Image (tube, rainbow, N blue to C red; front, side, top):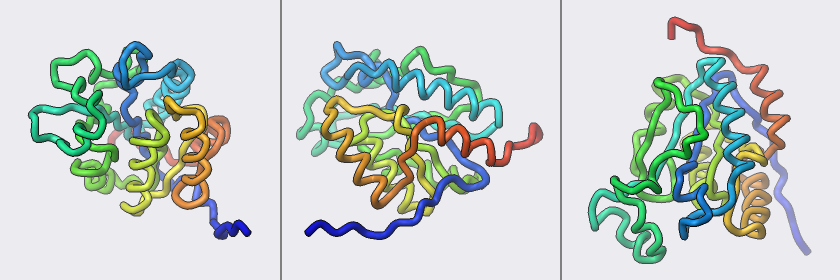
Length: 206
């Protein structure tokens, strides 16, 4: 007999941040061993970035970069394709379709989570962020880890369905189900956009 836990939808707080996980060439270009067809995911992220820029909410973009042989050695030994993600590589650069603005925050990471080993949590607290919209690639890996850690850092977490993707459709579906059951609100993009209308814009003096 399957049992399900009762859960309470959290939604967004008053002041959200957009955390775009690894929408980089290595993950959006199917010719890269790490990549997949992600045009729809990029399009959804462009839409979200435009709205966050309009309201002056923080936009954070993560990329994966390995500067030396010791960075995330166990992770890279398990997934050798990660060794492509070196500082000089085309693969670590953000997908050029993203409308990156001057004030957007760039985080380099070496592991799956945007929060692990980075300054992201402290930075968001300094900016008085109370919730995060987590998007990007891939659902079963870096997006999942970032969403779980976002909750563990005490932020409300929302995942827009159309703004996340995975190389494996079955893993994508299973992880979204599990994330929605325990860690985040997984919602259609249209519902996320509607919820954002009720958040507070940051003043131009901020």
